[in-house]
Length: 258
Figure 1 (spheres, rainbow, N blue to C red):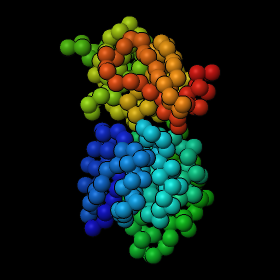
Figure 2: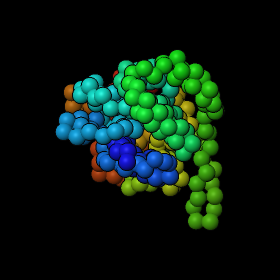
Figure 3: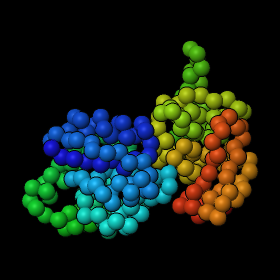
Figure 4: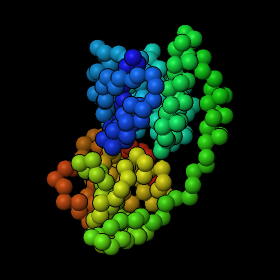
């Protein structure tokens, strides 16, 4: 039985991955799901597994920090919405690099790649970077940004334009769309699947719960030496502070300048 660990901070994305793994041979046991850089570093200091499936963007940083800190020799399948980390990922024991949203077939092929290297007793360090780059070239080009979002209110269906969207908020395994005029709707998607579909000029994922537009940001203040606090308009009526962590601050500032 293959023991895998999932590093993913979004509940729905993790649940979807687990369901796909249940349908893929050989028998796979999800030994642990980890949700942050801090939690993963602590867990891997005293535990191990056969294979890691890891998102790159986590709420408290990038998963690369885990592997740099511990220098793990465990094969990794990276999962992410962005392709710019492909070369960096192969500093580690990367078997494959799946761009979200991926399906069961792509995941199955990545697992087969791992089992092939494992059966041949080959180090995944010998994985050809050129093969990876060629595979990424074959990945369908990103489609145009999604500019309309279908929601419902009672029996009515409404199509919200991207200009009307203030922000998206993940809460209790659901995703909500807030409009600039103060309406909120349940939206059938996840942050990780939605993020690559959105315009990077209009929207920015500030943490594991929020993707915001420029027009939704009412105030930005320094919360600590390495974090920013944001107040949104309209308010989400949540008591939780909306913070931008140190790992996102520079990118966030660059986004605000464009």
